[in-house]
Image 1 (cartoon, rainbow, N blue to C red):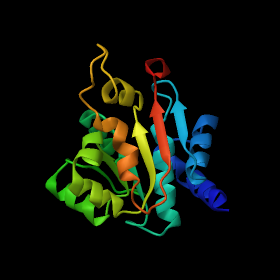
Image 2: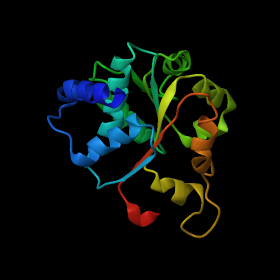
Image 3: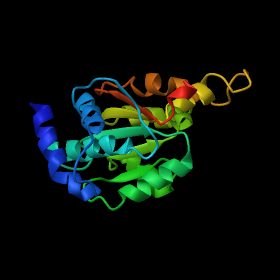
Image 4: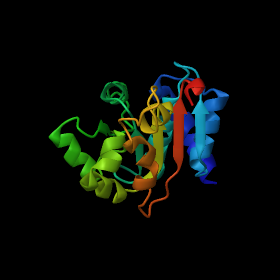
Length: 195
């Protein structure tokens, strides 16, 4: 039943995202999120991998009546990606979007639960106890690991066979999902060959 309500809301808000029709793979990603199932989406660059979790966040917010009711947490490896995504999403009236480190004001809004779609680095999610506690106190319904191939290349080993500099990447889900909130992992990448 919840998936049906979610589906109708997604169809209603789709034009606000500049899209008229979802691709089958995008529908499948949203379905997995709604059913609290893990999902790995390995799709080409420019396919629209971010759209499903953005739509999911907006639809969940509408279903649950307002800001602070639902939070989607996006683990992103690069600040440039976070800036780009939050800038693109700023035109969507259905969502309050921001990233940890954007500004002191934004960080406070995130901690208060005023931001629906939150972007943060693996180091923030794992390496900063204050932020880990803050995220665990929110109603996080979906965790997205964007560019998940970087978990392997940056989080487990480097391309030269040495220990990677970004060990926090591999621990992100485990540490954030210690909260009592329902959490579903969603991972997207454009390059399966790097796994």
